[in-house]
Every structure is written in structure tokens, then in C-alpha cells.
Image 1: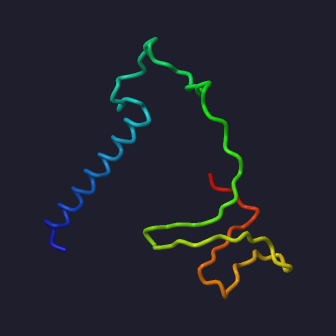
Image 2: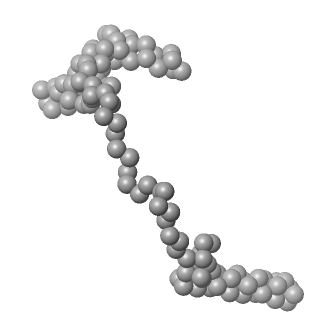
Image 3: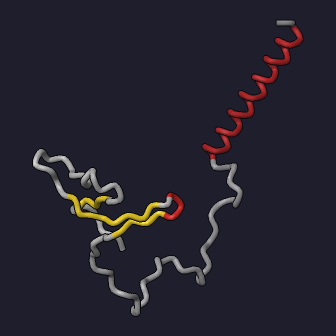
Length: 111
């Protein structure tokens, strides 16, 4: 490496180290805040989380899924409920029914 290039590289490294040390110092001392410190919250600002309106609908009951439709993948298939096989694994839909999808009966329901 030529001496001029070596000096320029060393100088650039020194500038980066000094700049990084300065940034760390400002972050640790809090002198780099944009607001200049804490400000009082106006009395018009609500600090409590909003409450649900009294006229909101009740939660829906669990529903059994009957079909899965994914238009972008051109999927439109009926669902069958699946449980556990005798060996403890999760069942799969019958292989002969190519358009039948399965829904594990112990999973969450849609809705």
C-alpha cells in the first residue's frame, strides 16, 4: 500500500472512531435528545386506554369450518374434521379424495 493511501485510510478510521465515541457519549448522557427534555402532558390528552362501547356485539360462538377458499391459489375445497390416529399422529384426509382438505378438530375455529 502506498504511504499516501495508508495515511488517508488511517485518518478516515480515526475520524470514524472519534465520531462513534462522540455519538455514544451523547446517547449515554442524554444530551442528544431532540425535545430537550420532558414536557408536561396537556390536560386534554387522555392517558387511559379507551373502553369498549356498551353496545358492542357479543363474541361469536365457535363455528365448525366447512370449506377453505383461497382465490389467488385457485383453492376451493370442502373440509373434513381430523383427529389423532391410533399412533398419536394427526390424521390426514383420505388420499383418494384429492379435493378434500382437513381441519384438526382440536385447533381453533374460524370466526
